[in-house]
Each structure stands twice: as C-alpha cells, then as structure tokens.
Image (cartoon, rainbow, N blue to C red; front, side, top):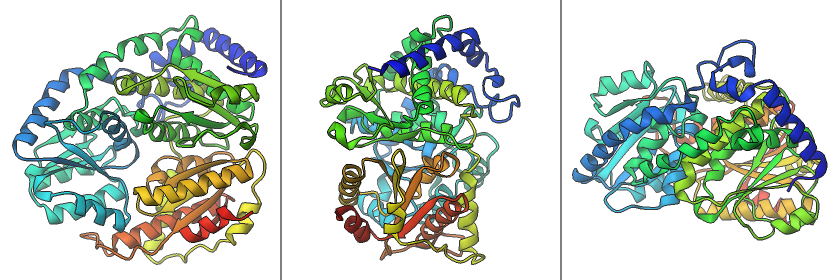
Length: 509
C-alpha cells in the first residue's frame, strides 16, 4: 500500500507515460526516451528481445552440459564480475545442486583468502573454468584467468563467454579454447541475465532454463502494454521506484523469500548502477532483516515478494510497502525482465541514462596509479568522526575487502543491524571489489548522502598474478584504496578501519 501523496504522484506519472508513449518508444528502441544522443542507449536495448535469440541455443547449452559431465567434470568455476556472474549465481542458488550437472563455484574477488578457499574446495582435474566478461578487459577476471591457466593449461577445460571482437575472444583463440561463446553485443552487462552470460552457466549447473523461459512470455507481453501503464508491471514498478525517490524515499528495501533471496544482489546492481549518477539515484538495501517500525526513517520504500511477516506493522506506521506476487525459482526469468523494464522506466523519470556508468572507471584509474606507485595511500579521518556526520535520510555503506564467506558475512551482518537500530539509517554491506561492479557507481555518482566505512585486514596469504608485477593481495589493496581516493575526490565522507574496529564502533552506545 502506498501513502496517498505517493499514490497520487504515481498515478500522475503513469498518465504522463501513456501520454508521451514511453512504453511504445522503449520497445521501438528510441534512445530519446532517455537522452537526445544515442550513445550507450540505442546500442544497449537488446535485452528487450534477447530471450528470443537464446531459446534456439538452449539445446546446444544442454549438449555442452552433457559433454562436460561425461568427461568427468563436477564443478563449474565461474570467473566473472557484476553482470557477468550475478544472474547465474541467483539461479544456481535458487535451484540448488542438480544431479547430473555441474556445481557452481563463483570467484568474483581478488581477495587471496577467497582464492585460497576456492582452491581448497575444488578438484582442478574435475573442474571446468568459465571465463565471463562482456568487455574482455575486466581486471579481476583477467587476473583470475591468468592464475588458473597457469595451474590448468588445458584448453579443453575452459569455456569463454564474451562479446565479439574483445581481447578475451582473441586470447581464447590464441590459447586454443574452442568452447568460445559470443554474446549479442547490444546488451549492457547488468541487463544480460537472459543472455549467454546468465543462461549458459546456469544451464551447465542444471537450472531448468527452458522452464524459466517458458514462464517469461506473460511478463514480456504485459510489459508491452502501452495504453494503460498501470497494467504494465514493469512500467508501474518503475514509476513507483522513481516517484518514491523523488519524494525522498530513495532507499529501496528489498524483502525476498529465502529460496530466492540472492535475487537481491542482482537487483542491487541493476538499480544502483543504472540510476546512481549525476547526483540522483536509488539505493537498494538487500539482505536486511525486517525490524520494528521505529528503526526506520522516512526515506524507505519497501518492496516485498509474497506474504512476509512484519509488513502489516510497517504499513500501519505509514511506510510505503509494495507487495509483488510470491515467487519461486521458476519465476526468476520473469522477475529479471520485470526489474529490467522497471529500471528503464525509472531512468526516464529520473532523467538519467540507465545504460551508462560514467564514474565506474575512476576507482580503476586510482587503483592503477597506486599499483604503479604514482600516488600515496589516501589519508582518511577517524571512523567515529565520519560516522558522527550521518544525518537523517542519509545512509551508511560498509565496504569490506575481506573474503566473502559465512563467518565474516555474519559478523558484518550483526554490525549492520546494530548500526541500523541505533542510527535509524539504511545500512548496506558490500564485499570489495565485488561492489565496485554494483553499488560503486551510485556511491560516487549518486547523491552525496552516503557515509562509507572501508574495512581492510592483512590477508595473511597471497599469490602472484601471472604476467604482472603485483600479487592478488596488492591488487585488492590498490582497489580498496583506489575507491577511497575516488570517493574522497567526490567529496564523500569515508574512513578506513579493521573488522574489529568496525564491530567496536557498532557496539558503542
């Protein structure tokens, strides 16, 4: 249920969408829906129909799965960041391990402790390494690829997914990797869930992709409704998200069923990287436990799938709550499309191009300079000073350059909820460098309402990056401090601290 003022704004916006034929123009791939210039709009709309291209390829994907498992492979090690790995992770997590298929092991980090943990869990002789990168230049993926090729230089144990003409395609040819899958190039990474980047790894892991696609049609058809956008699930959701943000409720709090809760990570990247630029943006808050109404400020919009305990209390306290239908694993393709269309509509309303990422390169540039010794480590103020600057309606982001494993995640989760309950502020947790491909754009390009605590620990173990003069630990440290430097350059409030210092700060009265 939406409060009266927000409901009125949404209804007015839906009438404007109909009057300006926004839905029809999106389907016509009209870049002027977002910007007068076609750059990174006209050539990024393939997600609208990519499922039609994918369906004929599914038998080949299934045949590849059978071929790999027949060869004795048991694990699919996916090397990829952001849009190249989040959707397969969501689907594999929701469906769980499937008999006769590969087990997904995702490496989307440069943390040497996480690399060590992966090496302990897998048998390389029974592993297929999938290297996934749209640009073919992603620094983390290139370093991981070099590392595993050094250990397993067998082209028959690799699958490469990339766009045509990338350096990664050329590298696959040079190394003799025949399982090279080229994705349609007119899709941005975060909109690529229903392309080869999402569907091929998922299918290799036994996800019922034909079943997912089979449930997609009604959602796509409904999102083509242009005369009455209120009946268009994507346009309606996009209008709600954008109008709530315009009214100050720009903390999109996702409440998802346990079996598909990983969908929150994918939505987080899609919304944050698409809307967070030019001083505006929507901050997704995923993975948060519902608290009592008093711990929330007036900056929240709650979106839940299905009946969830605690929603009635939030509504009664005046918080806007959107209740989408309950979903299970087979509904994920339809949800991917709903949220992609909603994001495109929200970008139009907010006046931003949802298909570019103008600030993503800044942290990468700073990291390269730090690795080359061209700039000193950035100095930051005491964490307590930074935290005390938080004001109502702002948010706290915990950015942890730590291994993404259960015990560490639990410690960060406890700190997160302690901060939320004490400060009545939205608190997010991101593992670095993974978040750089997700919320990193919003942190630097969105509104200056964030306080950032960057958590670092000496890794204790390290590995050289083959062909480079640095190690994985040095790369991770440069990425952490490069992002700190980029945040400071944008006038953001940021501090560096250890995990123990974070826990002490969270426990303070």
